[in-house]
Image 1 (tube, helix red, strand yellow):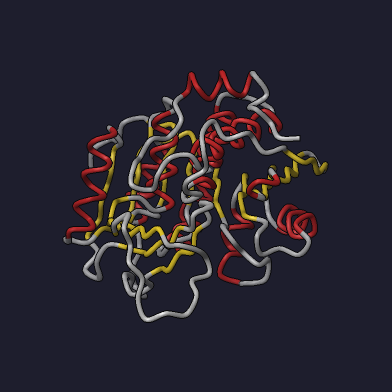
Image 2: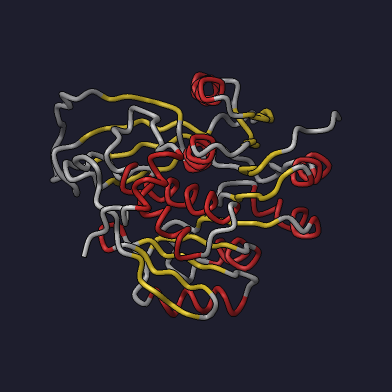
Length: 307
């Protein structure tokens, strides 16, 4: 096993392909069929892919590790990483590459349908490989896809900084708890939370999180750092909103960029808001994360923050 290239961020898991369908409205009214004039497209890009793309666009050395099938969807993922110059270690997955269907409404909101058959109970990342790649990295971002939960006991003793995104966790599902309690930085959506502050403080109290961020779409985000909860205003999108898919991943990537640059949590969250707003203006068929110059310029201007 050769010595890995030094890396800023190792992204663990979350590689896959999505079929994107723009629908007339969400939820869809009951009907036998719909005509989709905009087309139905399958493209590479799930949560780990989007975080890796966002990090690389901001100039961070990024390595992505996951299981991929020997199938057309896996080929799309491999091609995406080659195109953007992102190192990818793809271990064989006989069950096939992770895939999902995203229904996107006219306002950019989405409904995702995940195919859970693309995993096997015994799937694991080889511990030696994990330790080697983590040892060459400044930070590891762990997605909540299979088999990343089993990787946490291997990663924790290495001492490398960890982050995770719990997505639309309801604060109760026990599957998410190992991720929430192992990470130094925890991202999640406030969409399913009746009391975001209570859930965020519980994450910090029960785990080792130094920072917890709950994104709230057009309402901005909640930031818990140093024991204090603050509101982060949403950034004004630089163009019309067409698709919210990947906005949370863009937020996480830009936040981690700021953290690794030594910026305070409030600045990191402002970076995240700007990147998330940019992601909402990019159609799902394109991979165009915000670059470093644009991020810093817009953040310095206040990111076009909404009142």
